[in-house]
Figure 1 (cartoon, one colour):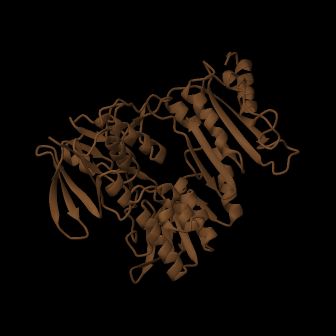
Figure 2 (figure 1 turned 90 degrees about the vertical axis):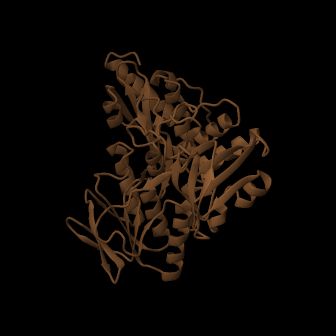
Figure 3 (figure 1 turned 90 degrees about the horizontal axis):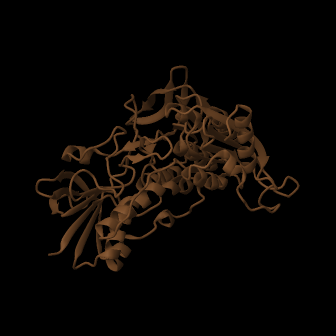
Length: 459
C-alpha cells in the first residue's frame, strides 16, 4: 500500500524534508501532502528586510521554488492557505482549515513532519493590536509592510527590539527615507554579542541616523482611532506612523504539545539526531525544535534558516529510507548592519561562564586587506578561549566589507575543538587585495595563545 506523509509547514524545513523524501521514494510508494497556512512556500525569510529596504525588488525573488514546481515536477501536493489546527495521534490524522474555501477536513498520515517554525514575540502591551503595528516573520508580513510603505508613505517609524531582525529592519526603513527610532530594554544591541562588540553596532546605527534608545523597555503603544501613533517607555513617548516588532521568536510548538509530542527545556520539540520525536512516525525540524550546542553541551533553540534546511534534509533522507543525522550547532551567525558586518560563532563570554568555563579573551584591531591596498577596512576580532585547555570556545567579528565571512574558518575551528594555538598556525590564504600578511584571525589567535602562556596555560 502507498504510505502517506504529511508535512506541516511549507518553508525551509518542511519542504526540504518533503523534497528529500520524494527523491528517495516515488509517488506510488509515498504520497506527500504539505500544508502551509500562508500564501507562499519555500522562501527566504532572511531576505525580508532587504525586500523592505529595496535591495530586492520583487517578492518572488525570495521564493526558492514555486508551488507548481513541487506539484508538477516533484509530485508533492502542496496546499497553500491551508492551516493545520489539530494533530490526532490516535487516529493518525491532522485537522486542516482551508482559508480559501472556508472548510475543515481531516487528512490521514502514516508519517508526519512537524515544521511549524517560530512564533514571533508580540508583547501583551496596551495598543499592541493597533493598526500599524507589524511583525516580519513571514513573506506575507513583509509584503504587507512593503505595501504600506509604498501606499501610505509614513514618515516616522519605531522598531522594537535590537536583535538581528530589529536592526536589519531599522536599516531597511532608513533606506526607505523614514525617521527611525530603535527601542530595546537591553543595555546593548545584539545581545548575542559581548558588550564590547555590541557597542560598535550601536555606534554604526547612530551614524546611520537611527535614534538608539537602550535600557528602555516599551511599556505600551499610543493610538488614535485604532491606529498606532507612537511607543511609550518609562521615560518618554516616541511618535511613529508605524511600529515594527523585532523581538525575536520562540519555537511554535502549540500543535505538537496539544497532541502529546514532548518538548524540551528550551520549549522546542525534542528530537534525536535523526530528527525523530518520541512518537513513532512523527518527525520535527526547523525553528520549532530543540537542538544540541556542541560547545556548551546544552540544549538550545536557535532560529536560523541554515539549521532548518539541514534538519529538514535529515528528516527527509530518513523518511526516504536512507540514513542521516544532524549533529548539533555551534551558534554561527552573520548579519550586515549599516556599513558594518557582524558575525559570531561558539559561545560569548557570558555563555561560556554559564557553561562552566573559565575564559581568557583577546580583542584585536586590524584591517580586511593589506593596509596599503585600496579599500582596506577596519575590523575588530574577539576570541574567547578556555583558560585550562586553550580550546577556542567562541569568536566575534565586527567590521566593514570583507570582515564577516572570516567567521567561517573560526566556526570550523570551534567545531573541531581546536586550541587557539592550533588556529594561530593555520595555513590561510594571503594576497594584499584579500588580507594582511597576518590575517586578523591569526593575529587574534596568536595574541590569545600568548596571554594563556603568560597565565601559565599552554593553550
